[in-house]
Image (cartoon, rainbow, N blue to C red):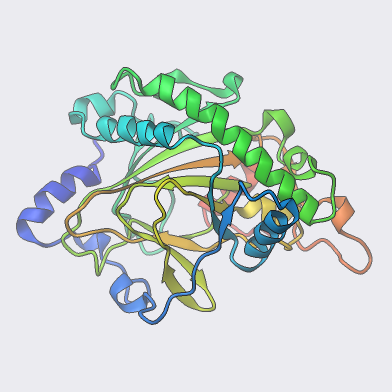
Length: 336
């Protein structure tokens, strides 16, 4: 069965200035109604080049406890490499449909790798205004080049170079977060599978939408991952839920946005917050983002670290193998 891609729906919808019914969100989700319009609190920004390591640690820990999200600057990933990553990703989505479909997720696949549109069940049968491409970038034993675009030709080289930098940054942040819990520096890295932890690249492509007041690029969710490191293009769209309001995230050129995901929430026994977030779309411009999800191997059992639980602090979460946790969450099954 041929899947209709949002990129194609966008092209026809822009002519009629209407969108198909399945993309129209209920009033409790519509961005025009639910986005906070007053003074917006600033999402924390952490400068990783600050020589005062204690100050950096405090800022990361505070943001992870209160927001579950922060932006890092001077993070060590070269600005030019981020530009190249975005350039090859954009060029892939500008290719003819037939070429994009050559790396499509197979219909019978149990995995998410490949070019696709729908990701998970929506209780109301609604669709998100986004197409995507998933593929693992690390460790090398998990990489399947079948789902890496052959065009543009430099796609592979750029993504392999980015993988090295994003792994280094994620390990720096996990070390800071571990120390913030009073644990040894590699505690959270080991809790996520150590050197076998997997880095999953996703490119989100949100084409122009004639009714951005009614649709969402991605509905409200928390990430399945341990942490997510995301770089967006210059078109705003990320919104964060805090204090019962949806707030717009400020765009900072070359910053990396860090999301605390479900597995760090669980490993930290609830100390660090998994951020609830969503994406809005633009009437005239294409928004794109490049999240990398740091995930445990499928069989890895993740639950509260024993050092963080005791008689006065019982485990708040049931341990699950990551594959079982993912299946239950994506299919809206109970997690307790």
